Image (cartoon, rainbow, N blue to C red; front, side, top):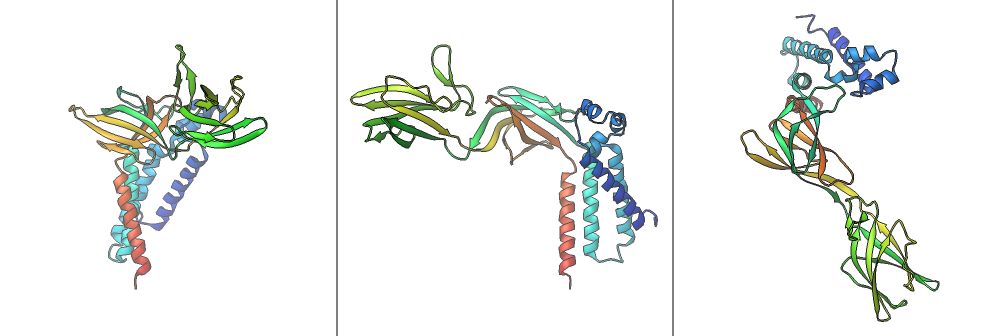
Length: 332
């Protein structure tokens, strides 16, 4: 018991964990095995055999954490009457954090979940090279995916005629008048990714602003006409117009990526949830994070599914450490 509770043992275990964590920080983790063979041709075999490509998920790293937890537990027990409670709270908090980490290594799982709109899926894709992932005990269906923006698009026009130029910002549904040109502008449609379909209809190819275009109705001298203007192709002008109009699209900034999903339990019940970048969803012990998307596709989303049975122990441990430190600092 004295050896298990010794400060020297704590120092050795802490140094080992720090060294292994340094290896995990220096050596890229969860990369494909081919990458290690190309980057470290002479050491790749040892790296893969020893599990240094997945340090924090290896059994021996969990063993180091368990040994340190045992050392702290025995130390706390032997000194429980000799030290004040703030010190015991800090030691117990560290013990809880280590226990939570061991639980995560032993029973945790993680994987990517690609979803197509309307289809239910429960099979994860390994996020680590060669890592095995379980099948979810339920299915997830994507109801919709969208990109949210912090402000609307801005549409700027530079109109020129006979050496005279004027810049104006226009908006859909609002008529703009330029008296010096005797010109009335009526924006009709705005497309972020303009494409012409086979039947000659203009449509939106994707939500990305890859080819911004603005359709204007021009009125002047009792005449009117409609024409498309393109941000990337300012020289596409209609020669019959006495005006030269250059369109500039000021894009909005992306604020969030949002997936609307349904969790389909084995009992047949369905639970709706919203998953965004900073707002994960939880269901039956699994946490789902917005992980990725495919540009140009509004019917596809990628979630990261994580099962971490030790997360609440870690939170309790942090709270105990904070409580003990606060009590130690303000003690009389």
